[in-house]
Image (cartoon, rainbow, N blue to C red):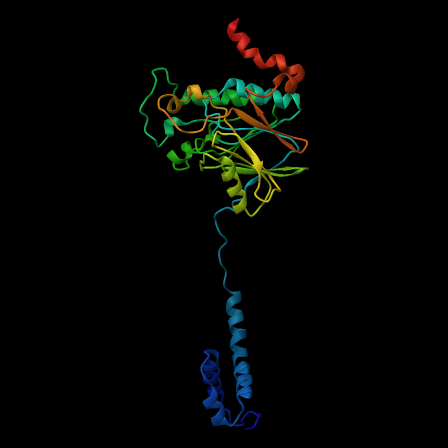
Length: 325
């Protein structure tokens, strides 16, 4: 067989031959008919395809795909060396002493960033779960939101940056109104920001800290925090809220700290805890201080507040003294 192309190779045959070659069909019969080697037949097929490829390139250049209309979702990042992290106040069942501890801790340590890790307001009027008991003096939603606004105002006396991430209770308003209204539209202060994300990243000089309000519940919240970190593409110290049970430990590889926050809600004011027997673990009233690279849990009952607050300690019990006077 000759390795040279036949002189009488017709142009129209080139298109047919090239099409069969492009489709993966055998060209052995063609090469035998024309007395050329299969390698030469392949080269001719490739040459025959080239003009068509150039035409395809010109067509491809005219194709314009519209840009997506939806936004890119990316968790918020806060840059702050120190912060106070509280969670699960669930107003109107909040614990005023818990809040006073958090504010004074920020003041005593000169920390002016406050992160509320979800469930700031209970929003039980928007709950999908039916109620079986409603006390006669139960506050309405207008009163509850007014109390929430007052608490924001009081927190902002010291904290210059207050960020609330969305907890399951906070999002009840948005779900009920089909995203027409969210909690952030109903609370307002220059120092306050409501994030529709249930998590954020706190970037500190000592490492990144992920703070999130998980929708899941587990009696062993530490294992839940470890599972969340294991599945996250971005790694860092992890702080979770929602279980209302404090737990502390490390990631399974031992590299990152794990903290599961307690709650700022008073159990005595929580109907479903008091009206029924429950096997749920006892809640802990605790929050987190992030300072100088340390993640330090503080407990309303067990912390030595006189040592923690120093000269501000007398102000801790001011509200109780006011009630007695």
